[in-house]
Every structure is written in structure tokens, then in C-alpha cells.
Length: 360
Ligand SMILES: [Zn+2]
Ligand SMILES: [Zn+2]
Ligand SMILES: [Zn+2]
Image (tube, rainbow, N blue to C red):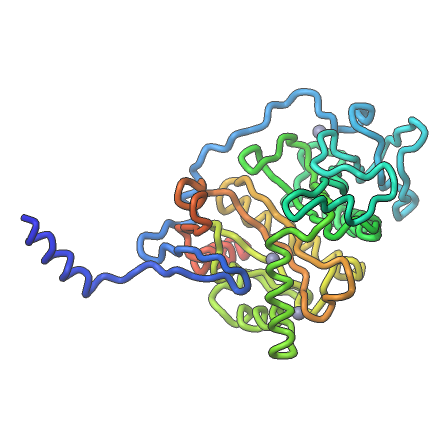
């Protein structure tokens, strides 16, 4: 019996094809791409989605007193917006955008001037000095980007940039992470449309690795590695969408089923210098991709995060981008214990499905 098995396996071994193990463009991160018994994206549409309980929403208009004073509000003013903040116990009403400190911050602003040595206590201990903010994207509770009006999304992106500018100017801030959690399973404890901003006293690992790898590429080839990736992906099987300013594609070694990245086509290291024209195109691109994702797999939970630089030092070698991670799979023992991932939807299939959905 054993011999028969061995013979069978041996024979199969000759004809069997293997899954691929792909390495990220820049990170030392490996993903098993299930090319062999992969799933169709639409398989995920049937999943039950957990919905947040609707109680009193602290982010809805009228409940401004339930949150700390806003560090930034956008108020309607003629055809444009007026920017303000809540001061002296006053809370602005009728806002379009509202940015507030998180009630349970991971990082706290220092009370007084703080030196580098006071922050980095030792090689394995730092003080969580920084900022943690919640950016309320709309006065309307469930106006998520997939369905928001473009002018409102333009406000959202402009507010990201405003906060980025203010926070990155602080001497103890080394990185500002702008991200969004959508759906309970993706960590959004409040269902009101919001993003978060966390300013940290050091550069987080993934961004640091990207920075290092892109600096190395620049030194060797005199070229931005992200521009290089873009060039390849624009003509490849993983392209999802391209317009005048942006390209959206499923990355070669996608960790998550239906993961996609959005790159500005012209080299730009940070969001800090983005033009109003580009902000509008970014709003349109973001909306159409998130709307496509929603239609394709029944409004899945997802996270997105910007990768960018906040100082001039890496302006030539780094290239800002947005990474979107739909949460359709559960990371279990293998992923958690090894840092290697299994993705059951090939990026090529993901790109094709998203592209078709966007076109429909
Ligand atoms: Zn609300
Ligand atoms: Zn570039
Ligand atoms: Zn990145």
C-alpha cells in the first residue's frame, strides 16, 4: 500500500505544478500565491458581514461634546471652506470635516519640550510621544468614500494634508501615518465614516524597510524604484485602473486577496506638495476603486494606509502611495508564527475582477 502511494506521489511529482512563492518588490516578505487551487473573488461576496450596533454616535453632528475639542474643522464659507479649531470650551457646529484627538490615544503629545534621549530611553524602550487623531470624514454617519460626493472627499484629502503638515513640523515627530479602518472586522469600532492619523517618534518598520530599499536602488541605478515598479505594472497583467495622474494595480506579491495599491504617475515623495488638481483626481480614483471593491465582494471590511515621507531627505528616492488591504481572509497559525502569508486569490485574477467591476 505504502509503495503504491509512493509510486503515485512520485508520478504526480513529475506532472504536478506548484504554487508560487513571491517576494515583495522591496520588503523581505514572502507570499504563497495559490495559483493552483485559487479562489474566485466572488466567492468572498457571500460572507456575512458583521455590522456595528447603532447607539449614540459620538462622531455625529450634535454630539460634539462627547469628544475632545477639535484640532481642525472645515466650515462652509461661501463657495469654499473656512478652517478653524475648537477653543475655550467652544465646539463648532455645522462642520464639513472634524478632526479630534482620539479619546484613547496610542501616542500622547508631550507636555513640555522633549529631547530625543528622553523619548528613546534605551534600545528596546521608547516613550509613546506623538499624536493620535480621528478625522471625521463627513457629517453624514455612513458616507464612506465608496459613496461619498467628490467635493466631500476632496475635503477629506485636504484635511489629511493639513494634519500631515502640522504634525510633521513637530520636532519629536518622525512619521505620520494616515489610515482608514472600514468595518468591525477591520478594526473600526465606530461605524461613522472616519480615518485616523497617528504621528510617531520613529519611522515604523515597513516604511523604514521601503525607505532603505529605495535609497539603495537610487544609489545603484540613479532612479526611483517605485517609478520603476510603475513602469512595469502599467503594461502588465495586474493593472486595474489608469488615469491622467494615478495608476492602480494589484501588487506582485499581494498579501491580501484583492489588495490594490495606488501610485501617483509622476514622481512625488509626499502628499505635502500635492496640487488641488491632483487632490480631485485622487478623490475620484479612490472613490471608484473602493466602490468597485464594495460592488465586487459585498462591502468587505478593509484597511488602507498611506506610505510617504515627511522630510526632504528622501525626496528623490521615495514615492508616496496608498495601499488598500481588503480583509477577506483570516490570518492564522502559519501567518502569525512565520510572517509568511498565503493568498488564495492571485493578484492577476484580483486585477481582472476589479477592472471588470470598475468597467461595469
Ligand atoms: Zn455618526
Ligand atoms: Zn518615483
Ligand atoms: Zn508601501
